[in-house]
Length: 525
Ligand SMILES: [Zn+2]
Image (cartoon, rainbow, N blue to C red; front, side, top):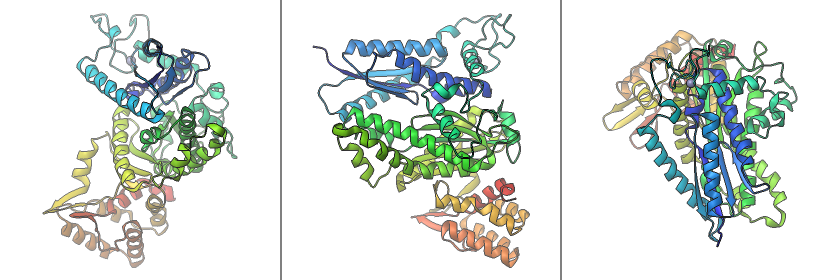
């Protein structure tokens, strides 16, 4: 007897595929190509009118039997291979078997996780893709990604591999990515973003305002110049929420609401904190779909954008769900209502990596991912959105080693940290981000900030002593400001530097304050 099968698919290594090259054009093209394959071409392989959700590089649907499910998975995998040459997707199917919808989905999520793990292990063992295997003296490496051989190096002036060439063709075909551009007929999250941006009262983001040509140009629009920031944001506890939903209809509404809330939050944050600069967009949403976002943006506005994005997302998500729940009518199973009334709200975490514009973008993405994971730990403790951030010099670094060396110390049984990151999104981070303007207005001496950056991390007492010494050198009004700021950020009045956070662990926001001020000094001007 034919038995219904649920199919779950997810694109592999999206970031590796999109950021496999340092060229902004190919990054944009890769992202556009993935959205088109995921949301248009994959859907065209499904039986007409069948229930499905395709967004954020993932697909979920239910087919009439196992053979149809397996055939679809094979077809979609072939599609990804043909269209991207270096991208891939993993898919699994599980029988519905008269089980509750949430249980089937949980089973499918677990099976997909196992399959992806297996796939990553085998990819690591053998990195070659089939078209890459022929090598010889006539082949040269792709000029863009440096990973795969270029196609027809003798005639192709650009010397790109198939993967990068496909990305570039896509980017060339869709030059204008604003509200009036080619996005207007698309159903993708990027299209939603530009439509939403186009409907805002000031209408700043029109087709007269073009995306930056390359990362160097974005760096030049930034302050300080030649820096940029990469924000990686991801929904918290989303997969746990999914399996609490009892019907396909509820899942569809929830999944749509998550994406709409992310798009709206991003739009509002960008519109609030940015203006076109030299007739260019000082930002680029590189990946946007489902509960996932990668945004490249000028360095000076990145933290405010990440903060607003994370603080607004849970509220907008609630609104979206409430607005669309009514359409369920008699098929309302109550699970969305339960989700809304839960005291553990669904939130967003973001990692913000601020680096030189010429740093390898792939390393910056990796750092932003680590920062997002760190923010997620804070978010799960507090059931609130959270943001972590890091400023780096010429090259991106491994977060754990950077944090260990630069900011923390061991003092017998006690550990102490001169930063209080990650921050809960909203007023806590607002208090930090308003500090540069306050210090600037009060003409706080910048050289004293630089001195604070240098205080020793040998032990807690020495930190406190050195801080006290610098504090006493300040004029009375500047002392007051610093004391007020530290009190507001951590509840510790200067010259007391540390507050106990848990047993044997002490924290101070001092270097958060110093770094944000050093970096955003011009923001106050
Ligand atoms: Zn290439």
